[in-house]
Length: 416
Image (cartoon, rainbow, N blue to C red; front, top):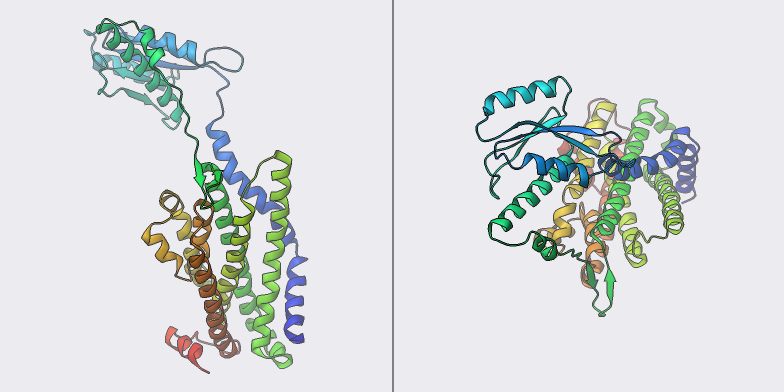
């Protein structure tokens, strides 16, 4: 055990003092927060200048009202209109083709940013086109749609002989507050954003730590085999002690990162007065994180010890990382139906147990028997994989030349 701890201490201290680790320790949370926050910030950023858009109105009655509403309803921070609407052609007798060509030229010359075509009376089931060189700003489409819908609705109300103010009286501002009921009958408010954020952050942390630590583990073995250092190491300790020391050392490195990021998260939640995750859920997630990390660490070292080149290591790492990417793709379907049969089945497959439970716990905590059974399943799986990886490591660590076949690796794993 002393030799195992000596290897673990060396692996840990060598990595924790490296510049790459220290930079990643601070840079990774910044990148993760940036990936989650910056897209929404940029997407919701308001315009700073008035945008000029055009309208081709074949109905002859929409353009003026549309321009008035767009210019009055949407304003910049300095009070200027967000949109300036120019009528390109109005009337049922206009040549639509010629009007479109004129509008296209105006867009090309930069006179207008884009233009919409209102054909006929803009019936409720009609399609209003918006043409522009860039249609990525969804806010323009939404605002135009809401404005035109309001105009059409008022026109229909007037046709029925009603006062248009009836529409405002019928409009209802209603918010739905999501409330999760526990078995004890207590109510716990749970917004979708909070649930999704807590689950997704956990998945990202697990993905990053397992991916980076796994690659470090594999590359460490390959480097020591290439430099023949491993022969010196196994002369001082057994292959099993060497493997266990590497796993423990890099696990300590990963948990150091996790602890540091947890402190940052707690400090941020206290500073901004927000609860990122339920403490009870956090304990379960930490348990599954540790089990998942040890399981994948054993797989990485078992799969990486027979390798001899960086190219082979990259291929194996890619296949293993794909197992961690899959749960991220299933995040939204899982939140929609956390008790779905396919999700529960994946929960009992060790490769997916930690990540699937990370999705289920924040949404709806599984039954106690599922939690206990999956924990026991993960412990047994870790033991089996560790033993198999140790057998492969013991033989492969000193092997050189051609990489063994998959069948040979399986025989090594089954050998006593």
